[in-house]
Image (cartoon, rainbow, N blue to C red):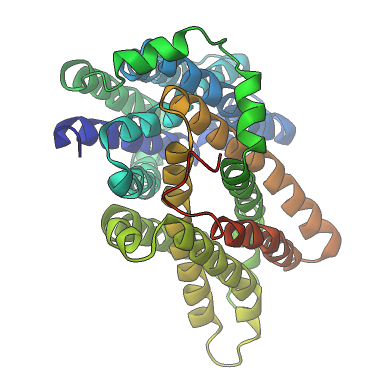
Length: 408
């Protein structure tokens, strides 16, 4: 690492608190919205507007961080998260909930800036390990967020059961802001900031260049395709495993999310550095996408196992999580290495923005497949979607890893 571990620890905590706060609010949001008379469509819009804002603002924050530095953008977005969750807890109407979710989506789009910070303070050889720490923060956040929500949103807290978790999320964001303000130094070098200073905020030429570069374009398109596949099973998986032969309750289903989170933490938080040294990012991209494809098709096929359908479900879920945990940090590491130093925030923002767009598209496609073609069809669709993703990953192997910029 090029700097002390303390700043990276602050980045880890920033992403962790972002995801904990997200995980605190999401389970209770539909019930809270119903308190204000929200219909099913309105609840769906409340969930979608968050991803829409993330899609729009990830490249904007990344671009701004290339011009102004990482620290001010991170401080601004952390403060915005604090305001968003405070509004959430003090909302007196449905439109205020929309304001809260819009602000939260804008703030949580800072993931591209956090990844750019990691790129600034790590060497190319350590990049995947650094990106893996962000993935581990995601996994931990998805474990602890719903847990906190389940504890503090019970009837024991009466009228406070929906607002108290929001206050907790706001408090965590406040602590995060103070930690970042006093412990997080700037990571972007002055010469790189100056190089980015003459560029426009929404750099459409940079987007065009990124998508048309032989390597970087493959990486960005692949990540978007993979995210469509993965997100297309969000709604169908809980419904599928409630059916025969699994018959799992909602509490039983939560253990599968814990399984995904734990594997994500183990792989991205501990093993990814060693795996990168052993295989390299390109091979990990191919391995990760292949494991995801096997896991996706294994989920519906596990229902046909005569004696051990539950074991098959557990194994398929593990393969899916291991594949995703190998793929995500490797993709972000490659994206940062293939980007010009003055455009790292912008390129990482573009990559994450594609993923946010995919998270809006994937669940819709999965829902259509579920209703129209049967309850197992979203998994087969996701598997079919992974085939071109694997092909794009294999295409990366033809490029020499030490000629990244020359091959751009």
